[in-house]
Image 1: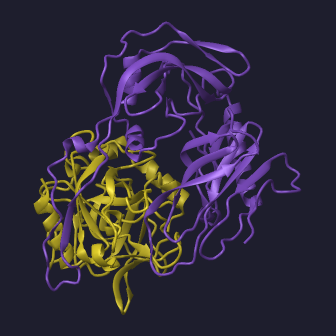
Image 2: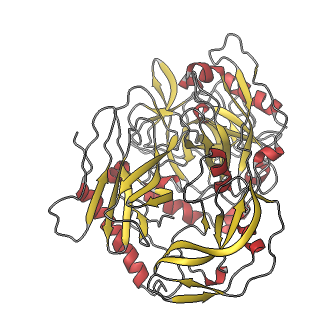
Image 3: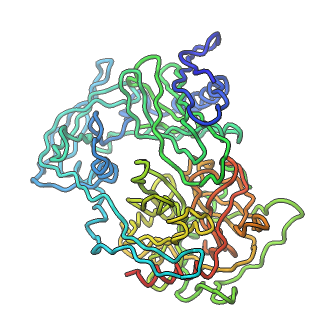
Length: 318
Length: 281
């Protein structure tokens, strides 16, 4: 099959559809239908615009579109540390500043500012820290044992101790600074506690803005996909990374699927993305486990402060 | 199968706080494994619905905290994965039933890691929190030969993040081996319903896969992530419990098209259950 690159041509609507990546392996997949994806993306965009216009304080409030806990931009070289970050497994090796700071301000790209109450470092830490790794309660290792049922084709039960990531992120200090964050009003500079972590080369940031000054995006419902589209599209999930024009996210794949193909539809201040599945003919059993698969798509311009949505569920991606 | 959107609406609309509060765990001793007498220890029985001439019956099925998503990391492909699973009642109250390939990748493979069971998952962990695995138990026939006839497993869980043992917190299903081919309710998290973020169900009459293969066949279109989801005989809306007679394992056509297949539970299954329970703290 041919690889589609660049914008779909000769479409009269003011959007561009970018398709990146080629299906590899197995039999050729049905090519991505840009019109089906674009139609769905437009449906999602329309639902969001309607929800924003309907009395949501989108243009006046502080509506973060990124996670309030900011991972290091370079990510985690170590799987265990990434897992600890995702799970909120922190511990402190130093006392954290206790008092609440004076109010700070958020600076938006148009130069406007918003004064906001701030929380103290300890309060911010308590929002990061969500539990302990299960290995701290771990029993002594048990060797796999077989209780044989000699003549049984099942072969007898075998047991093994569950292996868990046993990592913490150790906070050694905190200072008040800022972090850049996507918001409803573009990419803003937001007051944040920068926690130095012993295991990482750069701090982890958690916004210092008190929850009372944070507004959630509107609840938006989109019509469900028709089943033939639902089977062909894979929803985009976070975490998302955006570097220059490259956007990365994950999708849930199954057995008997090849590489999915990412797609993005850009209109106004919205980017709607997902992937199309590369469903392969079954050769023997296809197990029904779900697999997290990274997907990359190239945008026409960097994501910047634009709202990023999943085409399948309509959800905002962080 | 109930269309995915309709299923989500039914499920989320049903489970009011009053119904949640009324749900009770399966009493100890009820729903115990029955190897010879299928009706031994079965919980409160509901009348089997009368089937129409074609297709599966569409019955409103309540959301239940007894089933959940199972997340894990594979050291074989380096990726994170998800399955479904159901709590199964036992004296020590810690057991989850799922698919063998959700705990071990099979022939030539390895045990999975970071196994976390999240009962009542809905857009995130349920109110009962997260139950990390303590031990996993599977049949040699799966581990050494990737034989789908034995594609089931039992996980012993640690206390949940909210404290407490699994079945004390979310209840536990019964388990029936040598079940024949009953009418069942699948409950789990297939990718083709709300991107596996919401609990889904499908119902149908089980049948034998072929004269050569005793696997259970279910005529439902279940997408990936549904592996390990229990197939429940006598599922009761009023307490969200049933008797597990099989679990989602595989399909012979590219998902999410059906039919789907699961192992025929027999005396070896009962042996695995008893062995896991004896190893349980």
